[in-house]
Length: 159
Image (cartoon, rainbow, N blue to C red):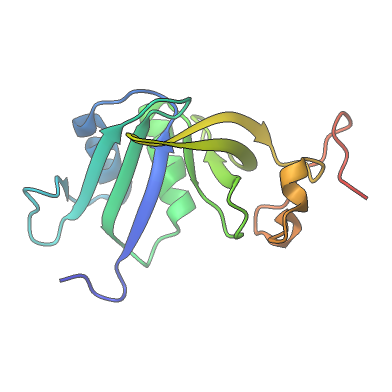
């Protein structure tokens, strides 16, 4: 039974990575057992890992995610362990906006093109959230996030 303190994390990884390797990286980052959904152990997290197309072909669903740690902190630690970038949902309602945990542990806001396929969602065309991307103009504004847009000289924030 899932308690109200337990959560669900949905991530995608920028490489095709074996499920056991993903679970091992999660276990190391959380210092806690991570098992398959079919063979869950008492007290262990459960992780479903499957593959689709796109630039982020490994999808990871973590069940019973602990509420006492920040999701982006663990995603960052897992990205470092896997040597691969991880996309995770951000704190806006903008459907194109994600947080990118880079292999060096850096967290930054990005926009992604997402296409729904028969195998699951494929994510492509990752671009920085600068505030000038047309997706930034969506009603659920990027400027309200804990991960604000990062304007650059080439892509200044929208006026």
